Length: 188
Length: 175
View 1 (cartoon, rainbow over the protein chains, first blue to last red):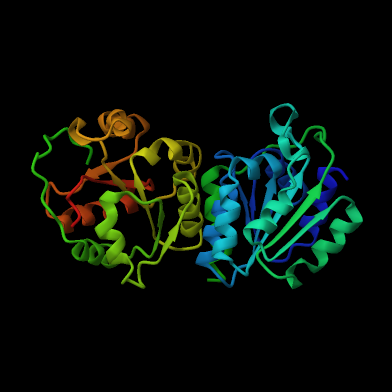
View 2 (view 1 turned 30 degrees about the horizontal axis):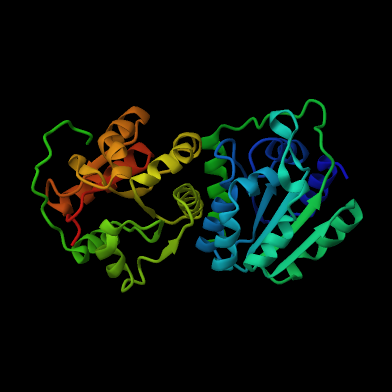
């Protein structure tokens, strides 16, 4: 499946979840499919969206949190998988779009072609882990993800490459912050 | 803040209980970080403080990311780190915290102060304040004035500048 199809499937299934996006094409593609106030687009600090997601999840237990991640991002900060599993927030789902490459810098190979990140997540103690390779399987998993034990980890293998002319996120970082805070703290 | 005033060579000791009272008084309610031995007395005190919950982080940049998430969700965070963690977390400050304008308190220990420490701390001990100045991060060196005054200033600055404020802690200042 293409990453854009995967993102569309995920985004169309969202309700009021706060979604903490990895930097780069994942933020941009999600923004292009459907911009939401509860989307946090992280434009720098690669690898830290999982940390941000944990901070939100622990601080607001009634808020469902999705970390929308990439393989390069997870590999850059694999220690965070341990932190998330140890803190064990039940309101958190960690989705990884694994294209085995760094799409935002020219498609260089990442090492997730040899590393099964979902097994790493299982080993450190995520309560549910799953790998999907087809759009149908992704769609089925997304539909039932909040009925799984959590924190849950869902890895979707996607094809490398980018759609043409993906827009950049047009909101400033401060705007992203302010509207995200408004949307999360309504539920606090 | 960030004055070039001469730092008094003899550190004045502040009881951790008093320091934690100040943290609570100013509404800080979410702590994360990676330990430094200079903060041992502080760590012992926060164990007894349900109002100051602490989440251990695996590295200082992750601690900063967690603090950002806590702030976005309405908490008032504190990050605790040894100054060796400043290098690890610098990109988190320059490409996340400062561009999204996220304020929180950073308690940072000053290993290598006055060039007296193990070799791995000497360079950062000498350069830390200069690095914070270069990047534009405000700091207070704890122990030069009444800690209640210093904490009030730190808290007020946080509200005003929408940036993290570093409270720099030398060995022996927190007892």
